[in-house]
Length: 355
Image 1 (cartoon, rainbow, N blue to C red):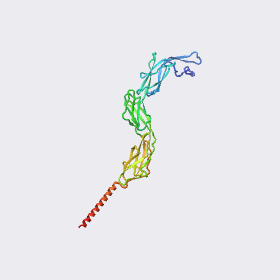
Image 2: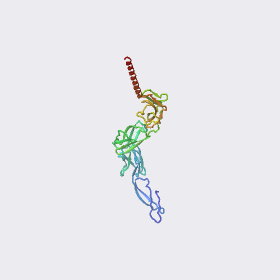
Image 3: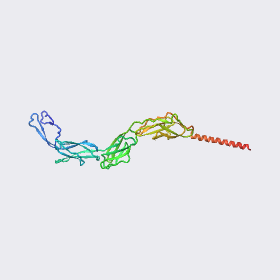
Image 4: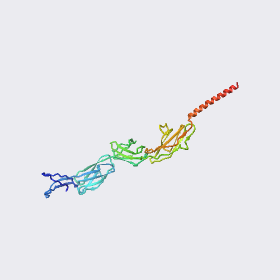
């Protein structure tokens, strides 16, 4: 029984809704049985025609889709093609004229593609269904670090099209071109960035776009420890500018480490004089020439993802020289003037003696 209905009072018509059940191709009969006269049913006929559906209706190259057919002739062989080429599937309809098969989407360009089902040895025409193919990009390795070389692979793009690749908002140089099946492969170096999560975007000339989310580590590296100048080595030279060797403990991180060194004559470290901030240091040490004075210094570590440690402040101020070069020059000039005056006085007295 498909459905039941009841004639309203004082009326002679009844409306009944029902879903057409699974049935093979051809003429089918429906009967209305009256409860008071079941021996005299009313009936009508309708035709069942073939239909195929694709699920999902949008997919990517390499993904599997399901093709479902209903209303076909019973137990008949069906030929299935994709974009005019044999899909490579051999199957027969059921006794109710149905089938369900699975198909892996081949590498092909973006846009609308067509499935076609044909029943052998029948006068039925081709039964069509469409599938929309979109683009996709993948990254190898899937979870790289800053500075790593990666390969971006794309499929489902327009054929023979230049692809614009962006890492967040920055363009990647030397954009690739897809082949005739909408594929490309392109290598680049993961750039430095202070953010934890990034998006790689690939867009072809037809406007087909695919994205790849790239999470990077967000944990700060360990803080280095100052070594020198320290408590035991806190004075450098006597006169003029001196070379000062700074050293701190080395730290490590899978994405790589650089250091930032700052030197100032106060603990505010702002504003810094030119040359008093060194960035991008790759070794746990640095040599800087400093003018005479009292200084403080601090250092921090920065990993390849842009994460920074806390500042490590040396608790000991250090002294460079006792007198600056200018003091030495001025002192020398004063000494020279005094010496000249003494010599002049000496020779004047010698002349007076011999007169």
